[in-house]
Image 1 (tube, rainbow over the protein chains, first blue to last red):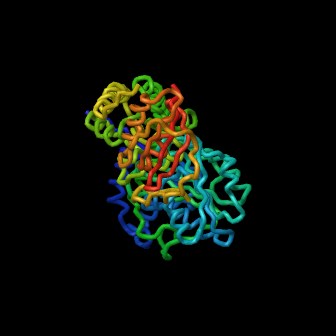
Image 2 (tube, rainbow over the protein chains, first blue to last red):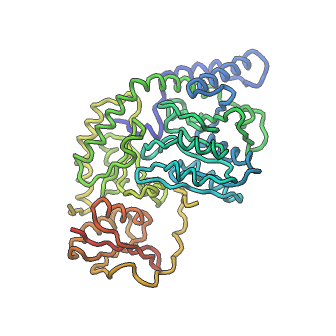
Image 3 (cartoon, rainbow over the protein chains, first blue to last red):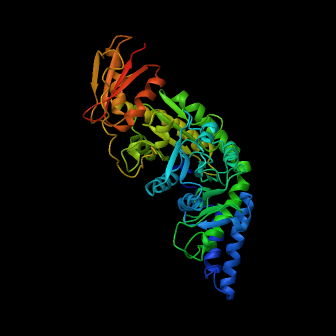
Length: 379
Length: 101
């Protein structure tokens, strides 16, 4: 019996998405750019999917484009947003704890002669809106802030930062990958990026929203597809399934969100009580409801993940040895908290209380065993 | 920008010139954790800090980049005093910690 506690990496496919995906594979396979009946049907399905996504996100359908991933949506927003404001300047502002897709796009911009300011965070991983505002300059082309952090669940002050950006005349990209489908994003942004598989949609579908009147120029070769924003043949079945999952997930979040939040609260309270030398990280109040991250002193994250996997729990970690790299998570580094022994628990929809109780039952012994085998005797 | 990609190993920060004078009193114990990956340097520090008298300094030498975050974070968590860090000429750092209890 195994429990999947890694919703922040990807949420299992929602049954509503599966049903609509299968139907669309049969009924919406034709080229939506053509003029015959099957093509018009595909076009209608695509337009309808766009309208459904727009409805949940509270934007206009013609502001929504489907991409091949959340990462591609971010890349297009960062590079296209910066390219469109080249005359204003070549300066980008990002938070230090953005997803790697934002930071890698910013690195590329920097290699191309642009300049990037990374705004730091407090020990909870939260951006100070005043510090973010202070980083905006007359030559700032674009600012980027996540709605919530993917590793520690801290919700960022998007409304305050959006207001500062508006006052400075700088477009804001909100990377809403971790919160879209769970909570509404505060208004005032210019670009939004999200990823369907995080809300129970299929893999291979991202969402890029460009608000009306916001200047954007494709950083890629010209293409007529995807509303001239996203090149390539549209993934109509994927878009249909993504829209179905978003509606279903958002509707269910009203009931399931508070239930998951209570389970997360229980983990937040119990883990430090049951396991010595543990630090729960991330903002204690302004946080995602389904995600909790903690670090166990003197334990290698990789060993703890393997042990928990053996015990039937799929969790993730920001500790260095768990990634294909020797560096610890840039998020934990920026927060200045322990980077080893890190565990991220993120509950998918419908997680049972019994699974959480079993996790709390096995975790203390798992940590104690690993500490003993590492020769830890320190109190 | 200070972000370092997680998908590739970047060169270690260039060995900065060693400060001309130490930032604190000399350590009474030096723990050599060079070449050891976290959490081992932290385990060595936690195990051996008891060997120095309260109020005295222990130094940990480490070159795992994670130690750069983890040693100060451990000090905050365990209410030990992080006094200063030096950059070692051969790469890595020397972290100086005062035992508080």
